[in-house]
Length: 248
Image 1 (cartoon, rainbow, N blue to C red):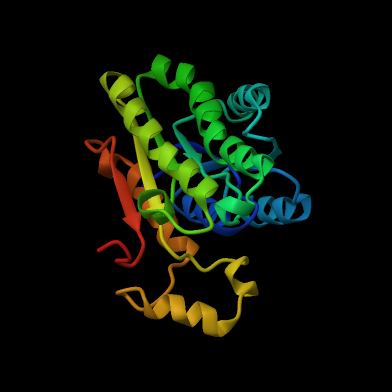
Image 2 (image 1 turned 90 degrees about the vertical axis):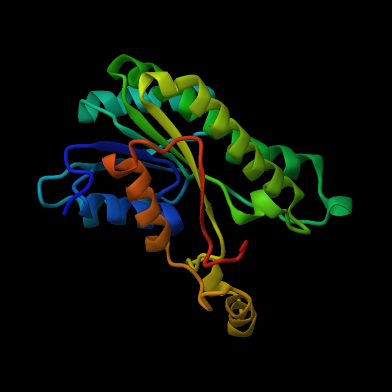
């Protein structure tokens, strides 16, 4: 059963990791996908070629969601290329980890700009379209760290906690127009980045998770499918934890 057939989604930061997994699963559920990437042109081209089959449109856009003007231009281009827009997934994000005493102002500002300001930019950019059609699902990617904090990640935790407050406010503002705003808070998800870590370290993290495994990008993507589809038509302003029970 294709839960997103006939729908169009923008997914930011989808050339790798969780975003890439979301793009693949959305395409499998019949969703046309416009995805953004910052610098990894090779990975973006590979993803576009891989998914462009079966008559469902998939297109990559090199765009910086942290830039207000670029975000607005992106939405205009997607509407022109695809003709419609139903779903926004704010997934773009970076880390600049360090203890507070060693964290520079630049590292704090950059993480807030890319992780949190981009969410404002993209949500603002799609708002007019969603209001006009009185329909839309916005999904913001937070983190377990945004809920419980983490030593050495004060900037990242602040950005991801801010996303939760932003999403709940948007849900209250736009709910009367049938526009839903929800958050997914992933835990330890195994991606290309975690593959570079030592197996002992990764296994130690797995052992501390009630389900005794790390999550896969598909686990997050499946939660996104639920929140993007009509199955969740009465759900807004919520935080869905996809963490194997880490916060239980």
